[in-house]
Image (cartoon, rainbow, N blue to C red; front, side, top):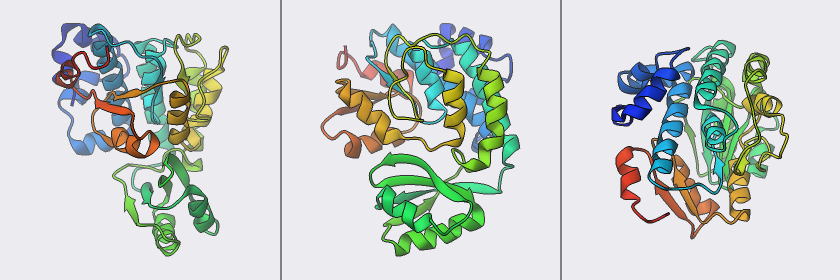
Length: 287
């Protein structure tokens, strides 16, 4: 997914500087779907894509008013907000992915998207099921749950009985943002606690609270909690809307976040920026 991005000499150089802990270029240009499904590989690859594409947006004259990132995307958003350098973000994310992979071996837990049911009804349906929790509050009618494989099967039956339109198992390697990955949080705290954090230069919404990071924020503490807590994405978008944001750009491959905007911010612009070509096609729209 990064071959086109790395044709840019400046970004190729940045990729090389960010590759002290893992071979980013290989992950971005050669790795297949099975290899990228492993969280220790997916996280740095996705984070670098977000950082690199944001760099191209700025170079093309697009100036962000605010930023937010879903799950590991929060690290790229914090780079966009000036809180840390690209090299430090990738360093942190590499260790985050490794810690999460070791905390929950692949194939023991997973996640599922619950469609057409409010979060309150989901919580009620899950109340009697052990080892299963809400993990992403994406929209009022889309919540992702995570848990053991057996618990997800039981949850799917209970959620459909409670009125869910559909429960779709996701192609992920573990139950992220649940207590299953809590053992990784201690390791992450040690890593991010030693980075050179500074206050953001533009508002960056935190997954943990949905609100922008305040001045003097304890980034290490927030990101430690973010790892094992639900992503409050709908609240993140609400915060950006309250700041006056009218156009949203999805910086990275795919269209999942843009798809949510129809429900989260109807009437707002939602634009793709997943490739250098897509950025060039934005033209003068957002300048």
